[in-house]
Amino acid sequence: MSDKLIVEKRNTVAIVTLNRPEVRNAFDDVLIADLTEVFLDIEKDDTVRVMVLAGAGKAFCAGADLNWMKRMAGYGYEDNLKDANALARMLKTLDRMSKPTIARVHGPAYAGGVGLVAACDIAIGSQAADFCLTEVKLGLSPATISPYVVRAMGERLARRYFLTGEVIDAGEAYRLRLLSDVCPPEELDGTINALLGHLVVGGRQAHARIKDLVRAVGTGAVDDAMIADTAKRIAEIRVSPEGREGIASFIEKRKPAWVRDFEAVRVKPPRKKK
Image 1 (cartoon, rainbow, N blue to C red):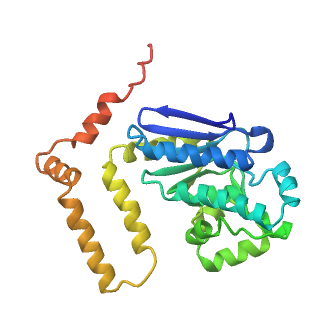
Image 2 (image 1 turned 135 degrees about the vertical axis):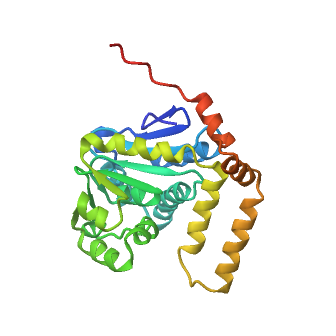
Image 3 (image 1 turned 45 degrees about the vertical axis):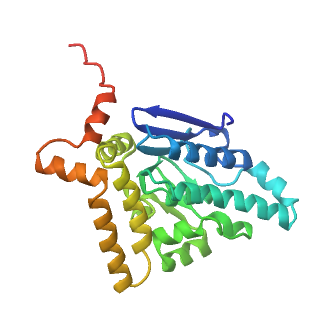
């Protein structure tokens, strides 16, 4: 992996930071490959419960790197298809992670950066953040990020912002559902830490099954097949080891085993000297 990413583990949380502040964390083929590798590694790491995606410097992610775009300008169709498939795979890997993911959006997120935000489960934005789907102004389309952005804001609003390339401030991004929450810059990490406090005590398998459930019921009619599928899902999770432990802990008025395990490895902050 290159130095374009910083990966830290704090207890059961992995923090992945885009580390190209000199180009506003724009991505190229190397960073795309690095992100895919890191997402796959975190997915396989049983010590990680939640992942936070962040950016170094003033921007979250400015989309495609200028030098990469210059190279792409000379590509034929097959080379462009290869590059596009790599980006699409990276976004799909992020979207399909079984663990909760949070985008920490402290500054601008443009073009492909909007795709990264939309592919995360939760996106918390600073009031200093803004968004723009700039592709149309380059004579391009936001094709690879579109499944995630359209899912977040809906088709009607996506038509407007894909076609106009308007800048979207943080408050509007919250209204459009690109952001799950927005807060003052100085409260960004506190807001995310509060969410992490909830996420790290959830059941690991429950997280994975819930994410799969949302994908399954998020589209389509609420018909007999969907109703039957949801009944099957709850029956399966109730008899799973994690489900049985969770129910038992509730009845016995104690913490479930996975919470006790988390608390056993958590590093407590040092006490402040008086």
